[in-house]
Image (cartoon, rainbow, N blue to C red; front, top):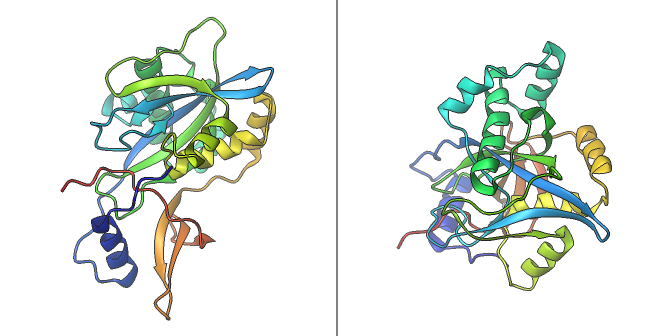
Length: 257
C-alpha cells in the first residue's frame, strides 16, 4: 500500500525537476532508526510500529523505532569511546563528521528505549542503510538505518503516544501486507525490509551490511528532453543517479488542505 501522491507534492517535485521552483527545499534533520531483530524457526523477524494518524510525518505507516537527533545526543555522544580508525570508518559510512556519528548512535538507542522499552549498547549497532527524505517534502530527515540483535532478557513493547500498534513481523509478511494494501510502508522502510529478506540469521545479515557500500539515497523526479517523467534514486550529497525509472515513491509528510 502506498499513499496517493498529493497534487501539491507532485507540483513541487516538478518545479524542482524543471528548475522553476522559487523556493528552497527544507534542510533535512539528522535522524536514526533501529531494526530490532530476532531469529525464529521461520527466519528473521523485526519489530515494527504503526504510527498514529495524527503524526505529521509518516502518519499511519509501519516503521521501525527511531527519531531525530537531539542536542543532548551530541553531548552524550562525546562520551562514547572509539579507536580513531573505527570512528573514521563509521563516519565515512554514515556520511557524517565524528561528532554527528557518535550522536546518531546515541540517538538510535535513546529512541529505541523511549519507543520500545529496549536498552542497547550503542557500540552494538550496525549500519544497514541511509535515506534522505525527498526535497519536495515539507518535513525532511536524513536517516541512518541500524540493525541490532534483540536482547533475550528484554521485552519490546510500545511506549509513548506516537504508535497505535506494534508487533514482531517477518520481512516477507510485512512486504506482502503492504502489497495487499493492509499496511502502509514508506519507500526506505520497504528497502530495509528487502535487505532482511536475503538472510535467515543475524550474523549473516551483519556481515553483509558491513560489506555493503552505503551512501545517502534520495528519491527525485527527472524530466527528460521529451517531457517524460522518470522517478529516480540519487546520491543525496552528489546528485549522482543511482537508479532510474523506479516506482512512484509514497509521500511521507501529511499534506494539509
